[in-house]
Amino acid sequence: LLRSGLTERCPSTREAAIKMVCTTWMKSVKFDPVALIELVGPIVYERECEKLVRTILDVVSDRNQDILNDFSDPERRAFRGNVEKACSLQRQNTEATELDVAQVLFARVCCDHVDTLTGMKRADMFTKVIPDIPALCEMFQQKLAVLVESIKTREAD
Image (cartoon, rainbow, N blue to C red; front, side, top):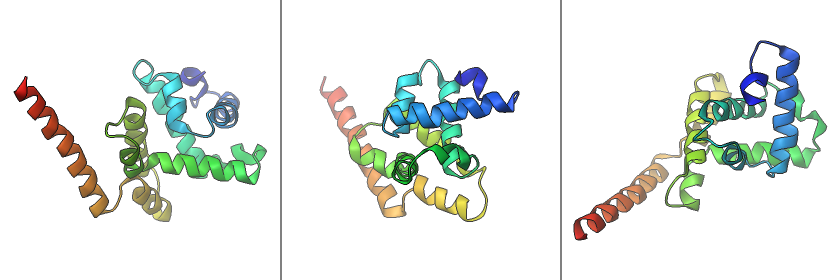
């Protein structure tokens, strides 16, 4: 479905695939796009997961806004809020020391997606993806501390 359904070849098929992804699949994982990517399998199906993330980001950035018309207002807010929250590198850092494959893939596609936007949407998405300088430095320090600890452990062995 992801490989063939999310292509530009047949607009009606694409529309149906987008609707299935955004309404049925996202709803089943409580609107958590990273959980959805994990279910698809980002290691084996990387390209399909990239298409999936781009599709979800297009819906959030209002390119396919009508897809969410079947949702109630709280569901629309949850969809948008969870996708925007997943875009933040800072959020991913506070939940775990290491980023998993799905989080890295989602963040990478979010960064690519920023280039497709213009004006205020681009600025808004950029600030969501990349945290402010102090937060970015804190993330870097935490990752560096993990690296140093890893090196010390290897040297001790």
